[in-house]
Image 1 (tube, each protein chain N blue to C red):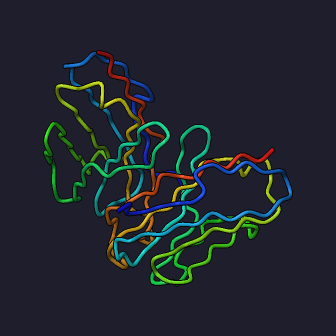
Image 2: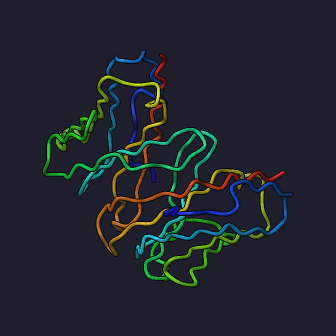
Image 3: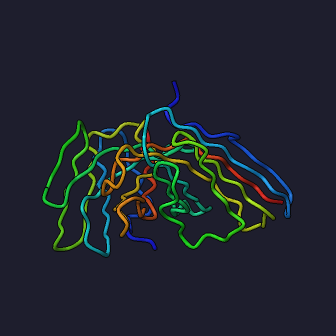
Length: 115
Length: 111
């Protein structure tokens, strides 16, 4: 009965490859997010989707393309992976559309290592 | 852009002691939240304090908010080894959807 799940948990790949990370939430939330946590544990918002529509795209290279087939899923596809993409990627969701600073529920993270 | 700054960066205490972490932020907020992250895990919401509140309690947690100083503190009383984790403050972004996190305080509670 996991609330926010991500797959895979670990992803090791070569530079230049294309990879995807999947996220699903079973909480019935309207809004989903992708965050990137670097090696110093700094968390930064990448994207936010509300009911399948892109709300926030925070100066993320266009090699990163989120896709939301329905409001319970927000997948992240990364083209032409670079060394600097190595990080932990967290998916999150929140209940209210447009709610200021709603409580967010995080997935367990996907540790991406680019060699 | 980074909004919150936690202080200290790292804190080591013994079980039973209290742990205090501070957070400063830059812009006006609707509310401020604290999250905990255990090693290798996702973040877990601990407590939310609204901009018109000055103090809030939840179990062994006490949060204060001073909007005039743009600062907040998280106090964990009677700490336990299981409290060992990183603690982050977070404020809402300009759009209101995403959260801006600080750098976090790494807390170590030794038995």
